[in-house]
Length: 405
Image (tube, rainbow, N blue to C red):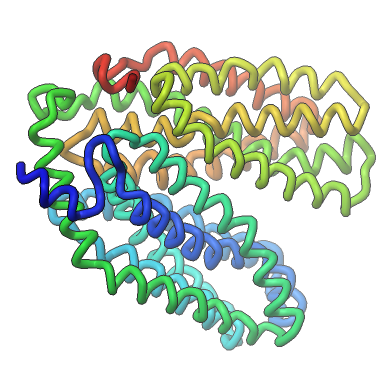
C-alpha cells in the first residue's frame, strides 16, 4: 500500500484521522438531536393535535424500533459498496422529517414524517459506524467512543433545542432543526471525496493486516458477543425507563426530581462512552466489556436496599457508567469479528441492539404492574448478571487486537 497516500488521506495505523473522527461524531450529534425531538414533542402533539396516548406510543415505535430493525439491512448494502454520502443523506432526511412534523395536522401525516426521519437515521448509523472504524487507524476504541458520545450528546441536546424552538415559535419551531442539519450535511458532502479515499485506503489496509485471520468472518464469535450486547441493551433501556418511575413511585420524589434523574442518566452515559473505547484501546476490548458488567447486578440490588436519595443517585450513576462503558468496545469487537461486513456489524450492534431493549420494555413494565417496580428492577439486575456470564463467552481476536502497547 502507498503509505504516503494513506498519510494524505488523514489517517495512519498509528495516527488516526482525528478531524474526520470528530466530523463523524458531529454528524451523529446532529442525527440523534433530530431523532430525540420526537419523544419531546409528543405532549405537544397530544394537546395541540388531539392524538391519544396509544397513538403517541405508535409514533415512538415508528421513530425508534422500525429504524433500528432495518439498520442491519442497510449495513449489508454499505458493505457491498462504500457509500460515505449515506451519512449526509441520512441526516438530511431526518431533518426534513422532523422539521415537517410541526406543520402537519393529520396523525398519519405525522406518522409518515416520523417514519421518514427514522429511515434517515437508519441510513446514517451503519455507514457512520463503518466510517468511524475506517478513520480510526489503530485506535478504534477511541474513534467508536467519539461516535457513541455523539449519539448520547444528541439525545441530551434534542430536548434543549426543542424547548427553545417550540416555546418561542410553537410547533412550527420544528423547522429550525434544518439549520444545524444543513450545516452538517454540507460539511459531509464537501468532504465526501476525502472520506471515500479514507474508506478505500482502510479497506486495503485491513486486507494487508495480519490480525484479520485469513480475512474470514467469525460468525460464531459474533453471535456470542451479541449475548452481552443484547443484555446491555435491556439493562440500559430498563434503567432509563424505570429509574424515573422508581424515584416517584418508591422513593416518593417529585416529578421534577424524577426528570432530573433522566438528565443525570444521559450525562453519565455520555461521559462513560467517551472513556470506554479509550480504555479498550489500552487494556483490551474483551477485558473492558467484562469489567463493564461486573458491578451492574450487585449495584442495582444495593440501590433497591437504600432509601437515601443521594446515595441512590450515586449508585445509579455508577450503574449507568459501568453498563455504558462496554458499548463502544462491543461495537468495535463486532466489527473485528466481521471484517468483511463492518457495515452489517455496525447495523446490528448499534441499531438492532436498541430494538431488543425496547422490545423487552413492555415485559418489564408488565412485571412492574403486577409485582411492583422493585421486582422489575430485580429482574434487570438478573439480566445484568446474565450479561456478565455472556462476556465469558467472548473470544479475543488476537493479541494485537486485545492490547495495543
